Length: 72
Image (tube, rainbow, N blue to C red; front, side):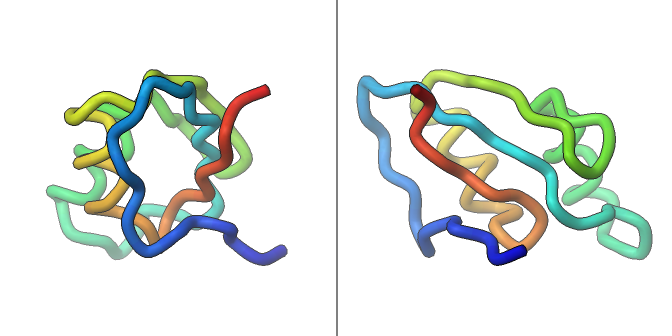
């Protein structure tokens, strides 16, 4: 499975579908907290969030752990 997360997600008026694709075990505590703050609980879990500044900042902090797509 390839992650389709762009290097930098930008703020827009769209909704983002964010899926956790890698484990946070062995990661830094701040990365664990960021993934949890996005609402993700386990690998394969998906949440839909607005592409506001806060969400985009969190996604850009942990791009190696999540896959981001535009929500349909």
